Length: 428
Image (cartoon, rainbow, N blue to C red):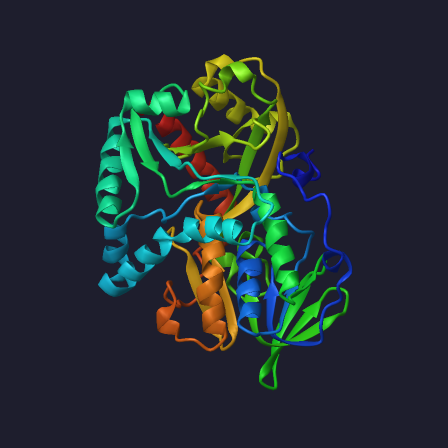
């Protein structure tokens, strides 16, 4: 069994960790308590502190042990839905606002890395959505048309072009979004934490919050060890790791396991063949595969895995088969890293912003866009928490709606994944 996914991923912790991240005690009273030290929680904490608020972050584990430190490091702007679909779903005003916001989410990450000179390995040469069928190519053409109308630096790729850019077999063409790129996600988590601490944010690790209770105009945030923080406002930034802290939140999400593998470092002879320009790639299959090069020149490939915790290397075999299907030349190259993490999706595949009680906020559901989306949300969330106009939030505030028959989600999701895998195999 893989006991510590962080330890076996190719992502790296910094050589030195600020002492305040190791032994900082929780404060007694603050303007804002943030539960969860992932991209959303740390970004909002940093931006709130820059607006003059006192902030305490409380994390149940160590930094990077959740999805923020275990993902594939692909920084992709936009959402699952394209601009015209967002307008149809949310209306002209809200749809346009969310489109404009989502268009800049990758900028939020790369601008922060550049402006703050963060020690985060990164490459901004774009993201390719690879089309495995003619139907997928038609969808890519529509996506290209819509985003070009919004001024995005995007282009369609034909079969020869995608083969040249990826070196992978079996794709009809694709779509290149040059706004996107890759980072080392674990390094980014630690650098966000360092920035937040430098701004005066308190971060306490390995302390699970057990209850939230509104009392005398403020929130009592109680931890498993008996500690307590009083906060004027609370941001619950737990996403896929939401349990029973906020009634109904966990039941409004479906969590999945994202499995990943990393090869041994690629031989120099393949540098000009496999992803020579460093783009990230994910394909158009229903159960998609995504891949990239790591900073130490491994090929990292990921996709959906079993709903249960893995028990051995056999649980990653579907990814190893996908690897050699795409890159037959890698047959025999050792797989040196195998790890997994938990991600959350919503029933409508849109991120959801909730405020079930005054001063209690949460955003959940990334759908594969978590690095850019959750980092960029830090600014509007901090503005709102500091007293801003809710009409300026990029997401509408919506009630928490538990998914019907949520207790059977694992069985249902597993069956759906199996069905989609079969359709993907049959589709041409």
